[in-house]
Figure 1 (cartoon, rainbow, N blue to C red):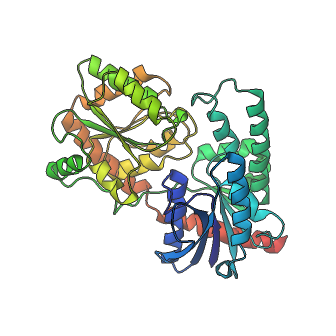
Figure 2: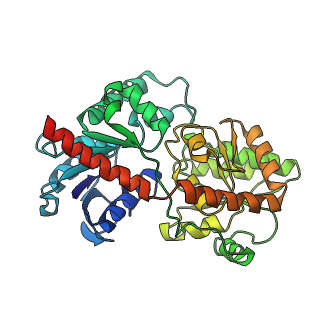
Figure 3: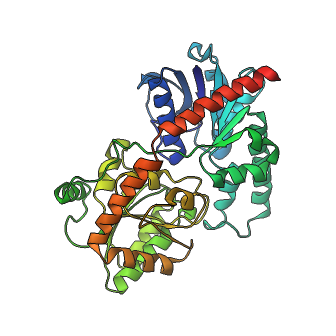
Length: 407
């Protein structure tokens, strides 16, 4: 089967959870003998066309000078790139993310093809989260509400045009149902996975110490917590830093390694400084994909402080595969991801005090951390392989083709 995959942002240029899924699915489809051509935006000086791990990549330029310019450039770029000869002869259109998906489905695009949509989250809800300081509820300006309603129409249109839909969790399925319950019969839940070969526990304490040193983290001393997040309000990072301050005030020091980029960096740096945590919080910025497994191996535990919109939790899955106990907020799909995992702890979102208490209890016993880390790895091996997800993608693509033939 030849897949024409259309994305706004994607592997190997971007490293969010959705982008990771796009890349993993594409290369694993190729490994199974399928063909994949991936259309995605161009960043920096990267080649407009290349072949990587068997995936044909075609990139279109984008204009980032304003949101309107960006959206227009994505629409123009997708439409123009669809005329590339590499896109000819596709059996199925595989759409990711709303802007590029809507562009691909416009007249003259991929409407003639059976369509499979990977739906990660409602863009309308992600937009509103910017105005709520990361909380799932709260007042927003009237103009923002109007824009969100328009985006919700786009979400629904994309779902209604799809012959088959894949979501990563029951939480995301519920979001689809709220947008349009009529599309549920063609929606299937397929949890994403983690690369169990790349993401693995440290073999011994010496490997963990060496990994810590390579990131400038203290190899000896307080336990190291790690999180990998975009630096935006709904990720709950201010709650995590406040929880760390509480830990130190209670005489239970820890070190936080925070990987990621985003608009909140400056305010987080200010919070770290005013909290007196300058020696204990390491804002690492963007970590290259190839180095992420080593970062997890440097740590003793993983923390997910998200306040809202956790559609799956790719970083959590990778932490489990890396043998890290997890302390997380009970948001979105996280409870499903951690169900049955010994030692995993869930707390209410937005409560730095509860997060601090949970971390203090987990970090008190290093031997227990090791036991729970081993249990986390076993949980990942049991539930987080990629094969089941790719099976579901192929089945959904086949269902999309059948649905189109019967129309």
